[in-house]
Image 1 (cartoon, one colour):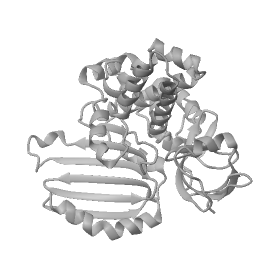
Image 2: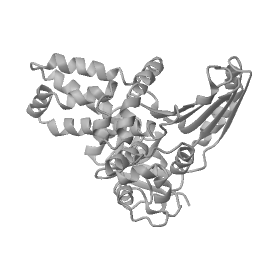
Image 3: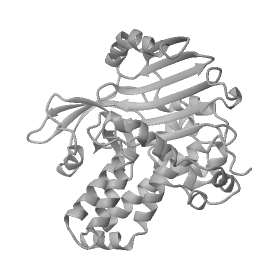
Image 4: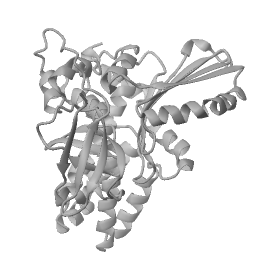
Length: 395
């Protein structure tokens, strides 16, 4: 039987949930179970709702939220769209990273699959383990934290003061890394991709340097967050406004999420694999987007002969969670959509001929397939990551 239950939402949580979505009776939307500091959360585009304890939901699971009533209290029905993993944890699992998995809210039955997200060498580093696991167990974290930081900076700017101009410029710089409209996407991807490891930093990392030191020269959003974290005037303004703790926590969360993305990109140092997490603004229609890109380094300079694979791990507000694998080789293109939402399967199946025709304008042949996504998230992600060469921090 699928997991289904009804819960009410406290007024304090409603303020978060209502940031960009009007939770009116009858509304249905998909969410992801995330591991929060005070317990599990239901994360959706533009907000998050604390999950009441006692329910057998695991981080990474997709659920459907249905708003039942607004008065006298906001109440919702939560229905699991997938089952939690029942894979047993690997033998000899007393390593410290297992305790971390449990701390992050991973159910006992899902420990084995969550472990597959980690290269073996990373398990010796609690900081690196936390960054990688948080990256994949809290997919919407970067978008949510960046949006909340922008909201906090806006409140501080409205308060005036001698650094109001600096705060306004900082917010404008941060918005360059946030997708608000589809036209923003290519440039934001380019900017976020520039935050991946350069060769010198990678050598320092695999040589044993602490991750924070090895990644210190990264530019882009990572550097901007570091500058804000060390800006005395900004911290003083936040202290005067009574939000210094909130500001520091948001900046720390963003730094850790970006470090996790950099480590993921670095897990395959001998190939051109790269990973990009793309932040989206509330109301954009996209809950999260992770890009895994793997060009074939053996293809030489012949673009038509080269093979490339791109995986889009994403969730849309209307279509739900999707895993899209695009592979090209010798002028041929194959695209597979896996959709969690059954209505999305039908919608994209109807659109598949048009998408295939579009691809055939650029390739010799093209094929588009749409199928239900029946595996749980951790299993799908773990299978993909197992195909990558592993990063050995002890090399």
